[in-house]
Amino acid sequence: MTSPDPDGLLAEQLLRLTRRVHRIQKRHIEQCGMGVTPAQSRLLRTLAHYGSPPRMADLAERLEVVPRAVTSLVDGLEASGKVRRVPDPTNRRVIRIELTEDGHKALRELRAARRSAAAEILAPLTEEQRAVLGGLLDTLVDGAPESGRRC
Image (cartoon, rainbow, N blue to C red):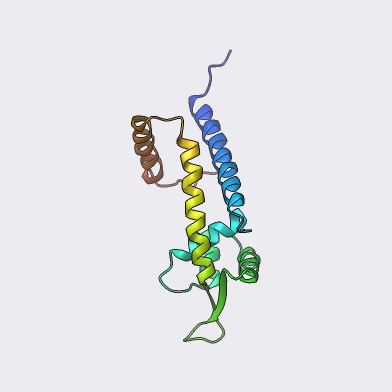
């Protein structure tokens, strides 16, 4: 009989937690009634991190998706008034994406929904357990550099 693989069990727990987090966040975002998909939410959050409006190629690279996926997301967000395409001031062939006032409002609502989802997920933990979890997550996020190893 083989003994259980502790790393395999941890990996499965992390995957289950990730799916649960996504499910709960999606529910909280839907309850806001903004009509924003999780992928659009991610694009809005990413867009907010730029000091000036980025190109679609910049967003695709940051999101690690193909450019046409960003085009579809921007199309939907533009139709709902959350972003707009603007010409690059130095190169008229380049289009940049910027948040509108509705986009900034949506971001505030999304942040509130994410905080609410996090509170729901973390509710079973004591303050001490939350502090320990925070430290462990910092270690995992900031830990060893990613290896190029593939399956």
